[in-house]
Structures are given as structure tokens and as C-alpha cells.
Image 1 (cartoon, one colour):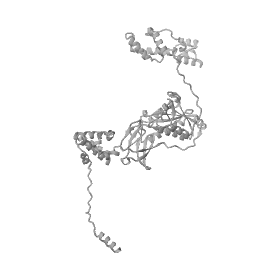
Image 2: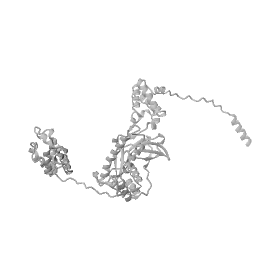
Image 3: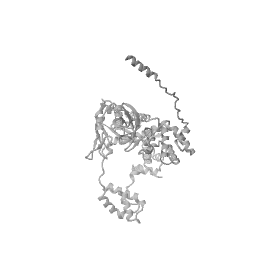
Image 4: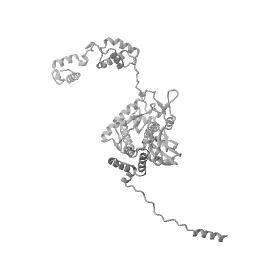
Length: 494
């Protein structure tokens, strides 16, 4: 029977309570002689073990240890796996893949005994109300869906390091619009502002300078000045300087996961409903931080400004392609706006297009660069008149709103190859834009299943579309007598 530290501690506890040695040994689950031994020693089993100074087996790398240490002394950046693979290639009969872990342990021990100094990180003391740290973190791993569709998103997370008060907004990228919205949401929730606002070197707040350093964007500086805070950032590649919010990102997502489990499902009716859920979780967590939050608030100045709009504005001219270009991406607009100048409100997640003060459309904002969002309804009226342009149209793939329409195009091409098949498909697309896309798609599915899709007329027939008859009009009979009366009146006046 193995005597453990826990058993000896139990023995000593029973003896201190006044139990006799035999009774104490019984209660500690050990023999009387063993109990007497440890009572006399007054030490735990772990304290009696001597450090081992011998090897249980021969060192397999003894012949090459000097070489290993010499190489690491000259170039400490070498990885153990690289050196082992070199040794294995030089001596394939001596070393096998199963010895890698042993070699890595030798390298690790050499680094600890003789290697170069490692970077030391220094714990910092936070002062109440001094700064707010903001960071973006991906929330896609939470598995949230919006109306049944997977929701890829980020969270803009703001934290007060002293009290760990936190607030989060939902966004789709590390954009300036998302940062402006996230910081303002946190500031106006607090009603006060700290002296400093700290971010990492994301392009939302900073940009590359000719010196190779990072400087603040003018838009970000203007936001900080408006809110009454001073901007500061971390050193490039030193994410630990933003450590409080970095650590809080994981805590926030774990907390959200737990509340989603309590909720029973992860589907939300809208993005706004999901954000309300996230902020409700933040509010509950902040309520547990009590006095330290109060200290933060007392040390901060009152917020004395109005909330800035959560969008930027761009005036752009609609091209002859019926598109506008915003943030390096192309978006289609109704063709009646070609050559007109429209005003676009650029939000983090959407664009709102206005003409002469009237809202024309809203479209989801694209991520990245050189993307396009083309709505076939904006251009089909012209394309059906110029079917020859379809074959090499730059945004041709956008003309297939669903897989069913793609299959319909293929079927029409089989029935009438070339330009004629393209024209029939464009007529189908025109019909979808003129009526209901969903009804046209159902008709296409039925025709494809039956193998009877040959031309657009087949879709018309299935939908029961009828051409409205020309209205009956009585023939126009000119009344020449009216001219005689005018002439007679003119003569009398003369």
C-alpha cells in the first residue's frame, strides 16, 4: 500500500485532535508501524524523496550531445525538430522518428541551463479611469444563426482594465465604421470617458507611414478628439500590451457560450436581436464588478458631446455599367441613375444609397477588395435588349440568382445552343424581375424535373401568364366644323 502525502496529513490531523496512534493510523488508512515512522520523522513522503542523479538507461544522444550544444550556442534560434531531422538524415541507422520527443527534451533542458535570456513581461498596475482598451475578436465560433442562416461576424470589445467593465457590439470587419460604433456605444453606455483609448495596430485606427512606423488615421484622431480621449497604440507585434482586452475576449466568448446553452438554441430573428443578447450578457457581468466599476467612473470625466453618426458619406457618380464603386468594391444600382451623382452612407455592415435626398436602396456591404454585388433586376431591362453582351459580361455569374437558374440556362443552351439559348434565358430572368422570382424558380424546377424546358414560353405557359389584350378604342373622327366656327368668328372680329 502506497503512503501518500494526503494519508500522512490525515494522520497528523487525527493525532493533533488527541487520537491515539493506532486509532489515528486506522483513520488515515495506514499501518501502525508506518504511522509511527512518519510521526517520528515529521515529514511528508514527498519531502523524503531524494532527487535522482542517475539515468535509468543510456543516453541515446550522448555521441552527438557536444555537436548539438555547439550548434545551439552559435544559433539558438534552431528548432529541436530541425536538428533532429538533420541527425536522422546523417545517421538513419542510429536514430528513429520515435526519439524526437527525447531529443526535444534535451534541447529544452539545454535552453533552460545555458540558452540565451528570454523576454520578461512585467505585470502592470492599472489606475482607475485611466484608459479603455478596444479589440476585435471573431464570434463565428459561437455558432450563431440569423433567421436560420450561419452568421459570420466579429465583436468589437471595449474593456476598462482596472475594473474589467466590458461592452461589445456586433460587426463584420475591423473597419473604422465598426470601431467608431463600438467605442461610442461603450462611451455613451458609461456616460463618462477615460483619459486614454488604446487599440492594437489594426488599419481601422492606424496606417503605414513612409518611415515604416504606424500613425493614426485622421478619422480616428477626430473621433478621439470628439470623445475627449487621447489615442495610444501598442508596439507592432506586441499584442501582450493589449493583454487585458485580449484575455477578456476569451472570457466574453465563454460567457456567451454558457448563456446560449441556457437559451436552448442559437438562432436569432435579426442581427439587432443578437446584439441585444450580447449586450445583455455584458450587462449581467458588469453588475458583478461593483465597487471597482464605481472607482473607474469616479476617476473619469463626464461625457459632454453628442453621438457621431455611425456612417461616413461618399458622393459618387453612377457609371454607364449602372454601378458605383465604394471602398474598392462594385455595387449595382437602378439603371435610371446612370450618370447621376448619388450620396452613399457607408455603415459597417451596409450601404444606403440616396439620390436628391431620397432613399433608393440598401445593400449589404462587401468584405475585402475587388468584390462585386450585382443585382440582375437593375440591368436586365437593358441586357434583354442586348443579349449578345451576356456571353462575355464581366459580372455574368451574378445573373444566376440561384442554382435553379443556372440549371435552367444549361437546359436552354442544350435546346438552342449559342446566342438563341442565352436570349431565352434572359427572357426568363426578365420574367423573374417583372413578376416574382420565387414563382419563376418553382416553375423552372418543375420543368427541369420533367425535362420539358425548351424556351421562355414554357415558363409563361406554366405560370399562366397571359398577354393583356389591347383595349378597344373607337375610331377617331375629326370634327372639321369647329375650324369653320373659328374662321367665322375671326372674320366677324375683323
